[in-house]
Image: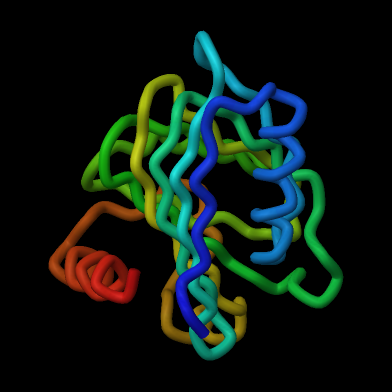
Length: 165
């Protein structure tokens, strides 16, 4: 399937909020969007389904997405969030991960939490079913608490995902 794009600016916050939340829900994550910046919010977001996975790339004004719950059919998703530009904060299940370029966070779609950016940011995310990743990644819970640093493997994955977008 082709890349789907949401390019949105100049909309009142309630319209923006509903549109962004609907776009996220299609990837298996229900969020409550809050605009943190001054003026009207904006986002340029692309999503691409890929053989049972989702790849999402976004640039946006400051925001906070509170993860509320996930759709039942997608509750086993893990989402790898990569900061490409800007600083983000991921909070979930007692973990508080500060992301900047070179650091990633692994988030469970079935746990309540939040992801926020206090300034302009560009992010990349890969949503993957837990069973596809759990057997390949030692100490999954530790990674979810501490995040991942960018080694050569993560940089290669980031390159591949960006090329898909």
